[in-house]
Structure formats: C-alpha cells, structure tokens
Length: 215
Image 1 (cartoon, one colour):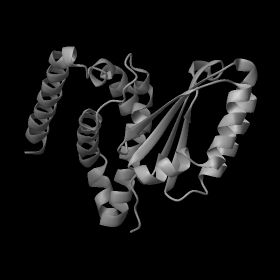
Image 2 (cartoon, one colour):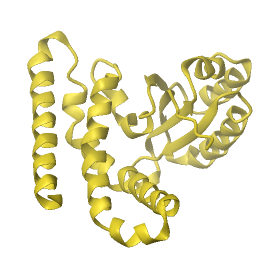
Image 3 (spheres, one colour):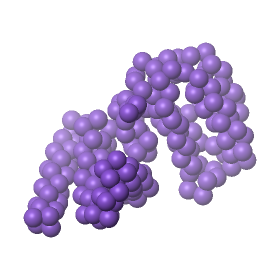
Image 4 (cartoon, one colour):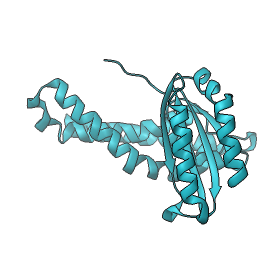
C-alpha cells in the first residue's frame, strides 16, 4: 500500500467581494494547478463563506512535509499568482499549521493573537471525534461488513469514518472547542488545562460506556 500523510498545511484567509467571486474561483483553479506540479503536493481544500458569496474564503493547501510546503510558498511561480490576487482582490492572511489536521482547524487561524492551535490540542480534538466514530462503526455496520472479508470491511469502515469526521463530527467539535484551541497565552493556562481535563474525562467516560456495551 502506498500511503502518504500530510505533515504541513498552509491556511489562507481571503476576503473576496461578491463581484469578484467568479474571478477568484478561476484564479484558485489556476494556482491549484500550478501547485500540483510541485513535489510533495497533496490537496487543496476551499471553504466559501456562508452563502458562498461575499466574506472570508478559507483555503487549506497541504503538502507531505514542511520543506515541500516551504518550497511552494517561496517559489517564483506562486509569487506570480499572488501578485495577480493582490492586484485584483487585495491582501490575505496566511498561517502554516503543522501536522495533518490543517483543513479541519482552518477557522482557528483567526484567533485574536493570530496563532495556530498547538499540534497536541488538534490531535486531542481529532481523537475525541475519531474514537466514538470508530467504535460506533465497529458496532454497526461492522458485523454486517465482516462477511465481506477483512480488506473490504476495512475499506468500507475507513471510508465511512473519514466521511463522518469530515462533514459531521469535526465541524461541530471545531466550533465547540474553538475557545480552548485558542487559549494558549500564559494568562489562559487555567482554561487550557481545564479543557484538557474535560476531554480526558469524556474519553474515559466513552471508554467505560463502550466497554459495558461490548462486554
């Protein structure tokens, strides 16, 4: 199996006037096509504002590692595309998020101090969503896919878990944990530790409940 995991994500927040949305989408397709030619490129996710018109557009560009991402960010090719964007729409905000969770936490780059959430916080929030999702899928439809064989059952289970996390679980957890994810200043240590304890208690509680169900 050839599997690669994204280790670095650049998140761009761009305010686009409603009249420029069509141009912006054409520009985005063009710069994405250019990025695809760079080593280590993984994927570009585009998140429009509510209603898909005027407002802040969030774009997450993921690469295999920090070096590959930096190669793209510093390239003359990207600089040419950025100049077109700035001339037409204006400046933007860019943050680099380590790890493979960039697109799930794209909205968190707009914290008051401009800092990205720490990797350990992002990992904990993902675990909080992933654990019950996998357990529930193991209970159902797990028994019904097992007769299909391990390989196919795993494929179905993984596809369902990724879809559920992407479009159902993580958007909710992202909103609920936004304040905790952004509480990284020295005077916010109590909130940071309190949120950590809440997540650990929730994980322990779910483990206890699932153990009762599964025996």
